[in-house]
Amino acid sequence: MRAIRFLPFLLLIGCASVQTTPAPGALSKTPASIQSWSMEGRIGVQSTDGAWQANLYWEHDPIQDRLRISGPLSQGLVSIVVQKDLIYVNEGNGVTALSHDPDAMLRQRLGFAIPLASLRYWMLGVSDPGKASAPMKTGGFRQLDWQISPDRFTVVAGWTLPQKLRVQGLGVKLKILADTWNIKG
Image 1 (cartoon, rainbow, N blue to C red):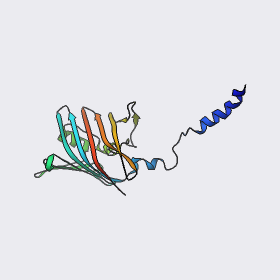
Image 2 (tube, one colour; image 1 turned 60 degrees about the vertical axis):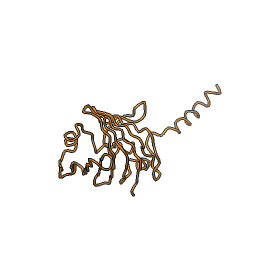
Image 3 (cartoon, rainbow, N blue to C red; image 1 turned 135 degrees about the vertical axis):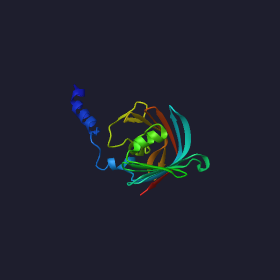
Image 4 (cartoon, rainbow, N blue to C red; image 1 turned 90 degrees about the horizontal axis):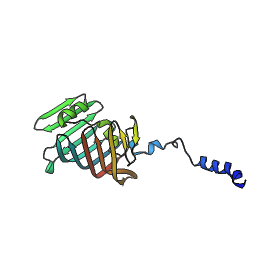
């Protein structure tokens, strides 16, 4: 009988601790809200056509993404600039390409395509807020038929960002290791 009298109180306590909507401003505090950043590190790619490793420098701002991919001592340097639905690739020695279909160009140049617009968020360890995603039991999340698994983290300017990231899907596996992060504004 005594337990029944306390049941409404216990239910009230339990309900008080459940929050069904994010607190005001909570969404703006996720890494997805970072407007400008750069990352320097390494990338490993494994696909049905083979495997390769390279140095990676990625700079993101609200207007464009600039990537530099190179082997040791900047051998085989490839520069990629992406602005919305426009991609420019400079492979050096006068070999350049411009396309209004970034995914198709990547597929043509690399043998696989990866959604660069979403990868910009995945690099920060979060899903693309404009696309449906689902958490995985092992950690990370699934989005656009890709599995994204941040493995190790580092704190930079108060933000927790991936130091190691695995991205897998559509016949390709990427492993990205961030040596340094720089948050700009």
